[in-house]
Length: 143
Image (cartoon, rainbow, N blue to C red; front, side, top):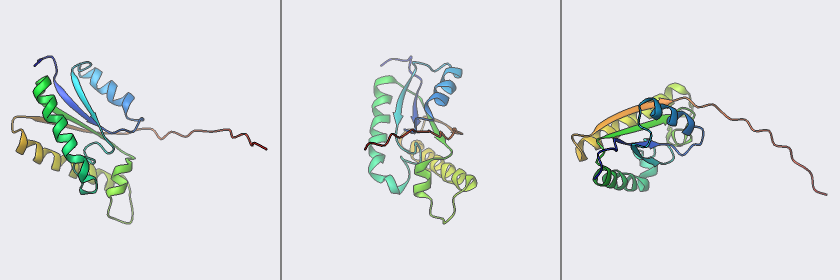
């Protein structure tokens, strides 16, 4: 077991997140010192009942990273404009305040389960803002 590894990062699969997460981890001097688990919705994906079949895969990966890498912390990074948060929303409307509550509930659930399974483990949470990408595609008509 190597002590050079410090954490597991739980992130969303949304490609808009990756550059920002990499910058955050560089600033924390964690480059090359973390294992990564990416799944749709990040903490929403591993706590919401809508994605229940995904939960065990996350916990198994966290357990393996703990055994193999000796990590002591989970860094969960969620983001605004999250498709998974939109899917678990049970209200007719969806806005940043509602999304914030969904992310906070996911973090709270994650913390509760983490403390139960790994009482000494630390949890760091963050919600980032990502830019919406607009792509202009030129279509050639085939005749």
